Structures are given as structure tokens and as C-alpha cells.
Length: 172
Ligand SMILES: NC(=O)c1ccc[n+]([C@@H]2O[C@H](COP(=O)([O-])OP(=O)(O)OC[C@H]3O[C@@H](n4cnc5c(N)ncnc54)[C@H](OP(=O)(O)O)[C@@H]3O)[C@@H](O)[C@H]2O)c1
Image 1: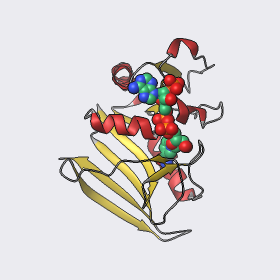
Image 2 (image 1 turned 45 degrees about the vertical axis):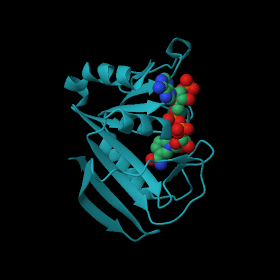
Image 3 (image 1 turned 60 degrees about the vertical axis):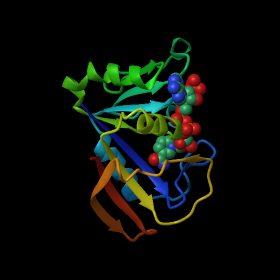
């Protein structure tokens, strides 16, 4: 299994503001996120799942981390399953049961708490980082990438509507 972060952050590492993503409105990045995760398993924190406002994303298997999974219920469907687990480790173990159907690359899609724990616990093989070349206000952050642990292997720059870059890092 490959554990891959998909994340968009500003130059000052902001990924979220008041429970939502910052107002950078990057259609190309949204499309990149949809195309990348379609048909795959996504691991996320409960607050990120809440930011979907009650709508699971179509054709994706959602694993949601919360400290009290027994209290969480969601009417999931076969096309968009949603399960709740109590830790990142449990999320990874659960994902392993479903890679045959949903693919070997499993995406960690945030938010700040979950990205940080995944990096600290060594549960990250690859990072797909959209770096927005502006400063944004916010309350949730993506950690600095340790270049001793990860190396950048690809970069594509985009100029509109504001400059940003698609960066790919893999573990050394
Ligand atoms: N720009 C991006 O790429 C991007 C991507 C994703 C999210 N975001 C933004 O990031 C923000 C959300 O991030 P966040 O850091 O506030 O929250 P989060 O990581 O999405 O979720 C935090 C929640 O996860 C659960 N959790 C965390 N660690 C746990 C552990 N060790 N064991 C069990 N449960 C655990 C807890 O849920 P309970 O409280 O239910 O116990 C905790 O409140 C939003 O603003 C969102 O829009 C941005």
C-alpha cells in the first residue's frame, strides 16, 4: 500500500480557515483532487469530513478518524462507503482490507491534525502538494516537509487565476 497526502497550502503553510479551505478558488486544483482520489480510499479527520457538509464524495471509500467512532453514523452507499475508526493506525489497517477493490494507493486528505500525525508516525510515502504562491490567513497548517525524509520529484507551475505549483515528493 502507498500512503499519499493530497494537500493544498499557501506559502505560509495555511490549509484551512474556520473549518473550510482558504478562499483561493483554484478550479484546476479541485479537478486535480477529484481526478486523483476518484475510485480510491481516502483517510481523513472528522473535521475534514464535516467540511463536506453531510455529502460523501461519489466513488470514494471514506475512512473517518474520530475519538468516539461508536457515536458517529452516516448513511453511506456502496458507491461512497463511509466508516468511522478510532485512530490513524486503525484507518490504515482498515484500508488494507479494501485495496483489492479500491486501489493500492490510499490518500490521506487531511486535515492538519491527521497530516501531522501521519508524518510523525512515518505513515506517509508520497506527498502531492499544491503550493499556492500567496500568503493566506488561517488557523490550520501543513507542516514543513523535511527534505532529509522526502525529495521533490516533479513540479508543474500554473499562473492563473493566481500562481501555484503542483509538487510531488516521495520518501527517500
Ligand atoms: N487545504 C487542504 O488541502 C485541506 C485538506 C483537508 C482539510 N483542510 C482544512 O483543514 C481543517 C480541518 O483540519 P483540522 O486539523 O482542524 O481537523 P482534522 O484533522 O480534519 O480532524 C480532527 C479530528 O480528527 C479526530 N482525530 C484527530 N486525531 C485523532 C486521534 N489520534 N485519534 C482519534 N481521532 C483523532 C478528532 O475527531 P473528534 O473530534 O470527532 O474526536 C479531531 O477533532 C478545515 O479547515 C479543512 O477545510 C484543508
